Length: 430
Image (cartoon, rainbow, N blue to C red; front, side, top):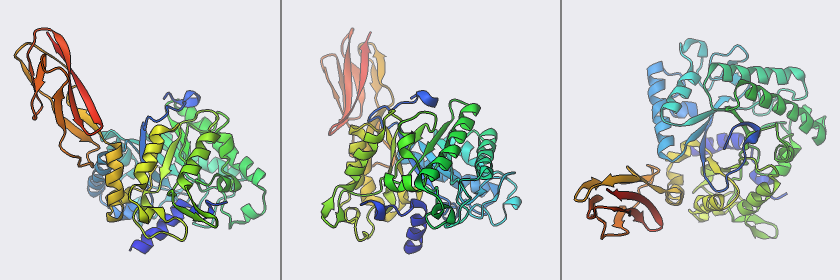
């Protein structure tokens, strides 16, 4: 089963590893360095069956969707890129394309709209949900002709259908543009391929913004930008000119122990720096992280994922310190997989922060208040959080978080902490 799973992931992830060696909406959106404001995860087409979303009754579908979004929320994510158009199809009743076989053997017999339910359930958990679309792909090797106007119109029509009928937060394209095995690729130049793809990108952007300035349109290109450019993904233009996309999620799925003919290189670090340097308009950039590779047997080149379990932690540290605003994990299923358990433990520890039930309270002398502290995300089982008063002459706090006011006036900070993780509650004495 693991081999089958990896093969499916390879289809989705575009096999870019081997190629590695060679905030306001709309146009005013700019980066907010190190904020980790977007913490996303991809939910891919093959996971519909695995996690109980295929061929289900409406009740079972809703129950399983709730479990999925709870797991996503507990992992610290606030955004999900939900596969909606995989192979010129749809996970909802569409007038543009047919039903996807990945949501139902016969979608017309479902009797409900899966996408509407997914949007509703995601929002109920406080998650943003973007409709993830493969614009051109019909099969793993067959694509619609990007040069044809009818292709552009078909994709845009489905974009309109999705945003007009669902309260999605955005439209999300991945790294599949021209297939290198297609005749369309072989009969065109890179310049022409970028031209044809950009016609679609600009039209989708305008379509999304016409609906609402709050709706977002983003793309997740291959981490090897040279490859992305060669198949029509004009990332240099998208990162230097406005009017194309609202955000970008480069898939930097490598570790920092990547083997080349001249020795090991820090592939993730090198690619991260390259992508941030290309960002000439300070476009919000979230880094696609290869969670699916954590703990698995390494390929012939990328040894880091098996040798260390702190790859994601180090990558998150770089994101927090650099000019990027978040990440997206590939994919949902790996959030609960055994092979990624150690990586995620270290990742959550780096991500974690302390949440308090109150950050400010007013007390009279002699009054008590119980301050409660817990870890975010819920999936992080950190050590017991401790409490201390930064001025015990004004107010004290015991190990259970019970604050006692000792003075009639002034203010004091009560600190919840563990290691370098700290959060203060201001106590005003009145």
